[in-house]
Each structure stands twice: as structure tokens, then as C-alpha cells.
Length: 113
Image 1 (cartoon, rainbow, N blue to C red):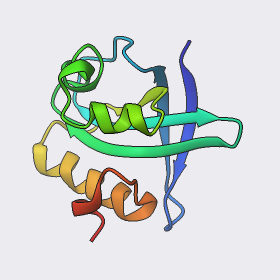
Image 2 (cartoon, rainbow, N blue to C red):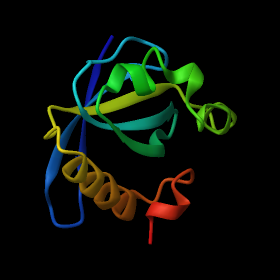
Image 3 (tube, rainbow, N blue to C red):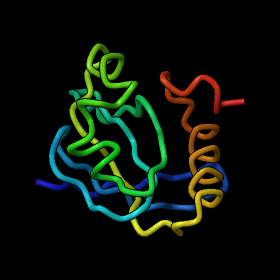
């Protein structure tokens, strides 16, 4: 089951996020992805990344992701995606940095600055 969330940035911009169970197939287009934990307190963002192919990077490719072990320790339950982001790498990277600054996920220490 896919859940729809909204990421609200400090400037008021609202971005739709589709949350898939961790390890489920994801869209194969470019976009920004989130490692998420859902528990009784709600949703927590553990990590934010960008990819040319979301499924290869964090869907079926989740087992090969360099942050997987840390995300499992923090309780990853879902992978959220903002798909259809422009395929230009610099556009995805800029959105990734903007989201990291706004949400400060624990596994993105370098992009929070």
C-alpha cells in the first residue's frame, strides 16, 4: 500500500511524497527519495537522497545502499519518493540539499550545512 504524505518546507512550499514499504518496487524515473520511519509518534525522516532511477537506488537497490545498515538500526519502515523531479542531476541535488536543510535527517550530516 502506498501512503501519500506532504513535505512542507520552511518557505511554505508543499511537496507530495509517496511512501512505499521499505524494499517495495519504486518508480523507475528520476527523483528524490527519503528513508522513513513510521511509528506511534508519526513519521520521521532518516535520510534524503537523489537518484536518476529511484527503484535501482532505493527500491530493489535498497539492499546495496550504503546507508541501509544505519537506516535499519534507526527503524526504516518506508521509502518515500518525490518522483518526476527534473532529470537534470543539479536540479535533483539542489532539491535534496534544500530538503536536508529543512528536515536535518540524522543520516545526512554533510548536506545539512
